[in-house]
Image (tube, rainbow, N blue to C red):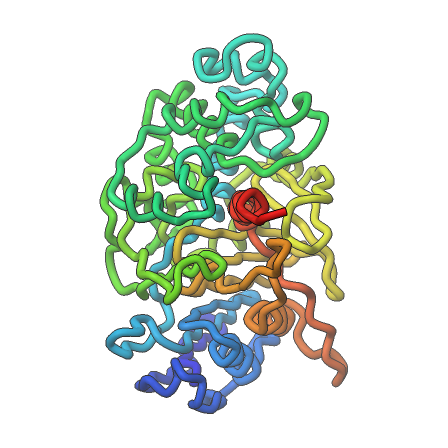
Length: 439
């Protein structure tokens, strides 16, 4: 059953902590409602706990989530943090949040824009000409890096080359590798330009490592230090940090398991990992509660001036972003329509850990979820991911969190928003599978 913490109007309303045995892993323990389900502010704690338990019952090892509506808060957890020992998850566990880092990086860049140090429509060559040399550096602007319209290729497949052969060997070979952002940027920029700068859309981690180096140039400080000072501390986050070269997560956390679409069977523990391969594109550790606090502060004007927040929310279409759901992308943000209006946020995928953090358009209601089994789907003969019950359960949890029951009628659950990096990795596996398939 879900373990929950609920707060209403800033004070603790109820808490439940229940030991979970191995039966949960087998999916035999029934989901049970938490006591005192209402946290106030329109948050139905009992329904959220049941939806979170359904994610575990659908095949997820463990998950933890947070919902905030005004001053009311709900935090819950379900399933296992460690499949070997049966240790249960608990609310507030720290977690690798992957590309949600990009929103933090974008906020730091926009703060420098507000101070006149970075121009959104200035070419990247004005700041780091050695990293994007030649004519391309004069065409790609800072804005294009922020909204993924630069046409610069992603570096992930080159940084983990076994993926191009349909193997996950690189994930293990490079577990404790420390790599400099400039080296990774070089891998991305060495690939052919995907399209004329500004003439298309393609998700690229290289964009956000370049933004980190722009921050380094204009501030004279490590970009992680700048983001910590200007974003993490300003938002009042207590459990969010860059791990640097330390492969371990500090504080309470779950083990994180990677299946890679069935290539790793049984799923392998990738909890300890040198995250320098992700840097300002995806290295942050946080909690779901911190992420709701961050997005609330951002959308209520606590982190950026009004003009920079407006720029952040100016979007371009991304018809082929790999999420399976129509989205548009702003500067470090995606927006997607739901039955209760547009929601904004970002997803995160790293080896073994998945995250989604979203906020309502008015900044009143926030939702974040993290889970510790990644790429759990299987592929069909053509290399396409098959539907999985976990995806349906995550969509229903998202609907309960952001579009709760109104007038006695439940709003249809939206499709969960995936993180485009999964699509990029899947493309490499599909390419390798096609190459190896006999005619």
